[in-house]
Image 1 (spheres, rainbow, N blue to C red):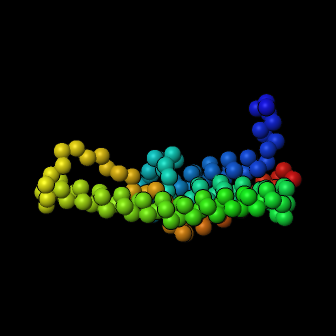
Image 2 (cartoon, one colour):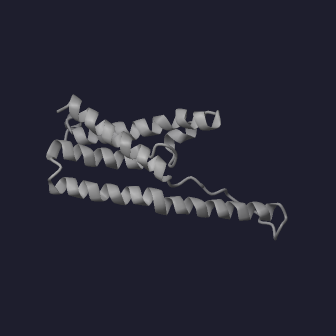
Length: 153
């Protein structure tokens, strides 16, 4: 499949745009919250809006626009989107809570409250998304899908 054919895949284009926009939007939104620029957000998980939610929502909505909302393909895309969004807001979020607790316990060890640990690598705490972050990704995915459909019908 030549590279040029990829540019005719409107569903793929909507997914890529939604994913890139979600990652880019994290920078100013986080700056408004913390008053500092965190460029690592461009390549990390977590934060507002959810790029996972944006990409699967853009995929499902685009499939609906281009193939029909009454097709089995849209049904599959919708089911995959629900699973990914559920995972982002529940399972991965809980893993983040666990990482926070483990980091707290290790910090207490270093402070001498219990037996000290010789080596420790801080765990990543922001793995999942709050429901609001997932909703932000869903809205972004729907908007990007609609605009892509309007531009490339």
